[in-house]
Length: 88
Image (cartoon, rainbow, N blue to C red; front, side):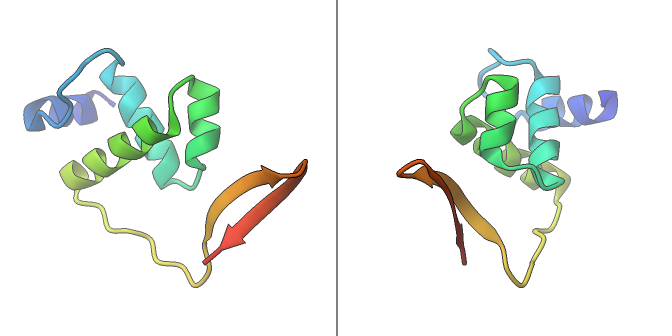
């Protein structure tokens, strides 16, 4: 984790530092490993948009490739009290 924090600090990808870098990196890596943006945001107390921005910024620094899947879930929400999943 210390290595990643140093890398991110050197790259200067985050302009504001209200949230500790370790939290930003951990949230981004959790999303990369498959957790949904909303579940990470809810668990950590951030907005899912912030987690998405941190993820994309970290992807540029680490130069990780996107995972391509045959079928991916792109949204989950509640509709009239029922859990609804939308696939691409």
